Length: 487
Image 1 (spheres, rainbow, N blue to C red):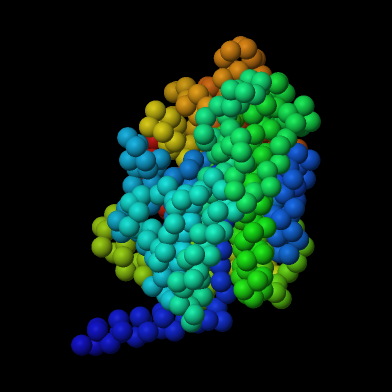
Image 2: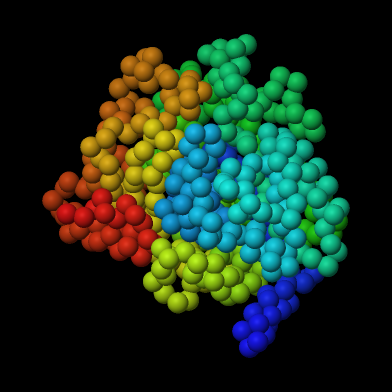
């Protein structure tokens, strides 16, 4: 009987934690968008006034890292606060890949819903099994038209109980490869979701390939410009969706009490970016529009890892401690789960103190863990990023790194072989395909990660220090690939 009352008290406290005055929270996750592909981050190609305005009305993070640069694994980390090697979503979940999140995991929407939030999702989900990521309302259609996704949001909001705050997971397919090649254009670039007649409600922006400035990590060739013109058009469509979302929130008087987090799942879908732990693959846009009285027009170099997103949102909602208890209670049913500390069940930390201007940072390093994209793209890597250095441990370094070619969708990647390029941007093609066991980069003096210091005798002590960091990280987070590091 006492146990029943304790459980009842815990549940009552959980539901009492939120009310109509609790902040509404929107998490926007685009698909395959690198950090540099927004105007607020200094990209001269991008026309993104609505996203730029969100940054001006909150905080822009310069050092936000996804922990794994692949769709399903990254999204699982975003929605659980756990590295994918712990939550089980090692790789893509659809088709023959069939990677799945462990049944004992309590996801962000489930925790928020049980705490009294009305949880909604529109667009892409791409984590499995779906019942572990259950929302109170979900409309997956229209993921290539963010303006249509806002219409979905309006439809779900009409069903929301008036006394509940809401959480919306707004996940676009843009700017991912989609709808095949446009054969009417030179070089037949992938459409990236663009259609000839334009998407309903969207003021499409057509880019001139000749005016595109190619990022340093990509080859400055006509194929690259043709593909990037389509890519940026898709990003502009996302910006149109953000404008429609803000307009709706303001019309309903919800804007001031709504936190909007804007980010992506991984970097651009090109060789050397997506599927890699170089900054082009893992360093992503992270913009937080704060509440009415929160900090504005602020830029920070504080670290954010994607394992931080779930604990941060739970903390902003006021249900962080209760959620930890729910996580531990569920995990206790799985004998493989062990937590190294008693104060958290997540691998990340809440960055709420930064968002409230009460702290400059909450951590001085972040850890990255990648194993799969598709099944044949098995190439486990672990990394640590500190204020000055990035250390990558290629656990399967004897293997050739499988090229990310998007199933033949990227004409830019195909040009590596068709034109027999020696360099792909600032990297040599051979260095993209075959990696050494260790990579160490001085990010302050070599931001393009061009000079590997791992085999320089002068950095031997630092290399050993960072190897020890990776070992400890793997052990503390239950990484089964830890055994690949054993002597």
